[in-house]
Length: 257
Image (tube, rainbow, N blue to C red; front, side, top):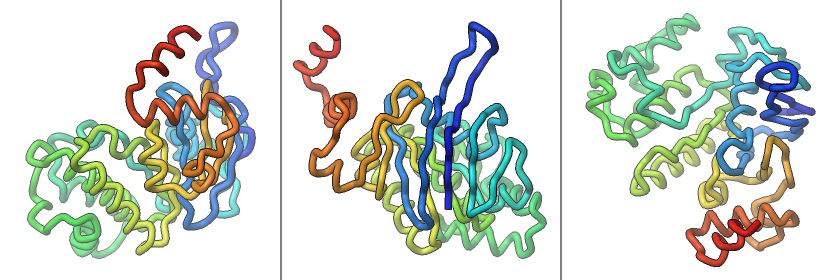
């Protein structure tokens, strides 16, 4: 469903240019959940921005469902590929009701039965019909992220790009959103790329993953490799240990280099 070959993204020009993504390659099968894991600033979200068409300054090759895509995308691409952002507080317009937010992509793509589609996607994400008329400030963080997921689903996409979809949420609702995404993948036959710094989230959702550092992929792992401690790169082991919680000895070792 997705093929990325030697993707490189740079910011700036000349001697001051920064390479945020450096020759990254991976494949994602139809119906698979592929994880990109690494600490903040390693290039994970930059990859999603290039895949989604939000960033147009990249080099390499991207293929979606067998068709090569360039920096500029067609309307059909945006119907097939949707993104769910990290911050549900910032990704929803504060002066738009849920109904307006969900209707907008359907209007842009000239879909029929918009009202019925809104009711349907609200049901898919576990929100009652009366949520149509609420504003973002009237919703909890988890409810806002459900609306953001519904906005992505209303176009009936094949692929969802998930940029840390639970990191801005309270721990109590993170599992609810992850379980919702798992159920939606199965019921709608979706393909996911999930970006996270949390190995717990990756283990909960993903079939395979790539570990990133400084814009590069260090290693590829199947979920079974992760769960059975079969990591080859020392950085992956340190990141995995850090994800499990604070460890005084590990922190001291990192500080000492």
